[in-house]
Length: 608
Image (cartoon, rainbow, N blue to C red; front, side, top):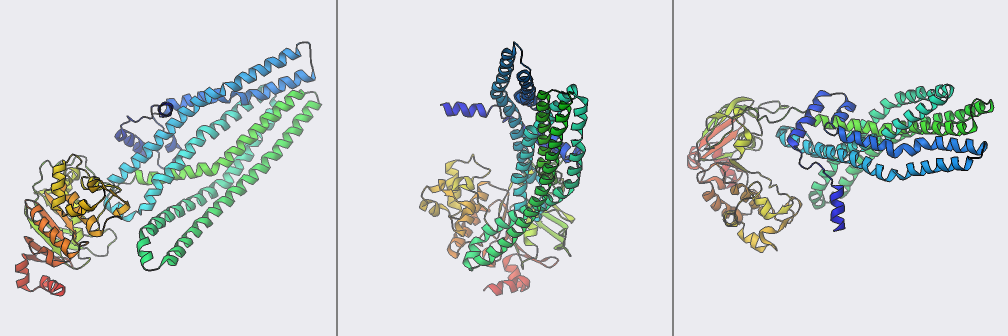
């Protein structure tokens, strides 16, 4: 019970009710307005949290007040002790009581200071990650194909963490530095203008040191961040390749490759560490010399009777505080550089314009399933030649069309055009007579289902994998889908049936079983357009035959597009499209194409 109450206390209004769409828009506007101004962008991220941050500063001033008052109290007690009078004991006791009271209040004021700033930082941290996730869901498939997933993972986790670290440092270290310097200088200027001018002499030194090293630290940190992103990519690839690596006894080769990458990271990290160390060392030596000079200077003033002995202690304490704060700024510079570099890194994703636009697009309320390629062509952005040109093909509602041809001919590209992952670079693709470019693809995709060549499963139960996006399906409907996808026997053999957990990438299922789960997921959507990209390629001959039988029933009244390499599986397709260099080479029924004895016939003969 105590634990639950404690948890409620520390979860205190963590803004769970925030509308993240509005938050995302606000963050996006912040990144847009302040491009190339990382620090202003960072401050803009906290819009909506300024009141909490102000209250945090107020409680910081209160909690930190003992540090600023202590030198004055120390000076008072030293002066009283060196020049005692009849009330010396009472005066010392008064100073001690005041100091103890100020110190004791730190517990409560520190709690509220931490609560206000930490809650703001954690909310912004969550909002940033949520906005990045949402942005990644909006970015085009082309963007994801070009950007390695390891880099994106690094941006969501490492870069946001660096921003959180910088924010924490700002509201703990930087705030402390600013307040300590301001209070110290304010007290000193009221006591002695001469000592104040001496104190100001430290500022040009600090500025010169920071200007000298800032560029190098930023450059080395940027190189280190890129090496870390590259390492993240290599680690993910290495983990995914472990079965292949082990099967071919290439462990040493893979280890050597990773060692080379890790060596590069260590090398760039060492360069960064050394420049930071050199930077810190020079700053420390400079300010320690200043501190000794301050002691000598104030000692000389005291010997001349211009200040008291207590004031020597007070000035030395304040100057030590200023030296520590300036050194703190210099020590913090690498953290600031990393944090601002991470702001720029996240900005690259948030400001990317390669997104699917849905605004002012027509929503498709009813999908019939007619597909029409009108003089369609497609060329990859960096491709030397078009994948195909002048493709003219009309697929009627409820018709099954199989696409065959050599690898790289453009079969999967055609499916990606139908899904809306790619956009025609010439001509157009019509869905129910409407240009896909004018459609809200979200509304259109609700009526389609896709079974990719490589089945994609997530960590969860088989039920969750099948009903993904259609969780309201009844148990009876689920059983029917499982039966139709030829999964019934597999489910019955599993320890917890349909509630058996699927391990990462479905590693506890065979390739054929994973593909059948993927097929069941497609069928549970009851789509009007069904896309099968070599969906039976991972199945053995017996399972493939059963799936073929199930498919015959499930494609009824659905427009079905199939890419197949095993031509025996598409005999019952309404039409077969042979895709070759440049576009559509042949089109007709299985029998028509076999009688024609053209390219399809030649392909079929090779498989017999």
